[in-house]
Image (cartoon, rainbow, N blue to C red; front, side, top):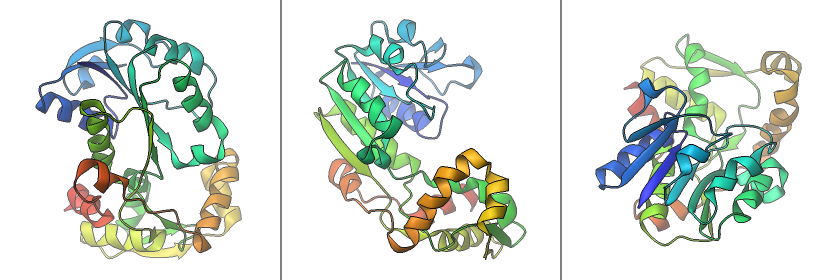
Length: 255
């Protein structure tokens, strides 16, 4: 099987490339900068026009990095009748562009697997400069998230390529839902610099985040205070190992 990896230099894609190469798979990577390719056969290009890269492959690891489904039909057309593992979002359950991308993939192949993630632990890296000063000022410290280690997403994808997981939707999460305040504490411990959370007013956060992003992010974080993100056993069920903890991720990154 020849597998095309899009987003090959990203948080999850680079681990998928290495994992598949370790198993002896034939891997092709689609990258904008060939110098950053993590291995495999390199094709320079862009995900919005992957026809050349997809020619002759049997399977695709698909990342759609845009907050809109505009152009998605052209992007997935070259994946017709191929195995597609799409890194989606838990938000696809409620519709929106994530669901639109899933539908576009369904329209070109019956051999699809959707990895719906709650969020990546790497999303917390933006707090690190503040954490090094001993204080992180941000909104909704009690919002509880079940962030997943990027290696667990990659392990799920590798299983989807090497086993039969066609027409399956998996909810990919960490092993527990931790408050953002607790996440900052864990990052501080891994850095060796105790870090505390300082609650930031919404108005200030909106200015910092930008109005467009804040419009969707702040209400979502607010909802997680009383209704935490779900915790799924799909990582353990599919991969055979428990989901890696946020502590595991922080120690790997900073210790």
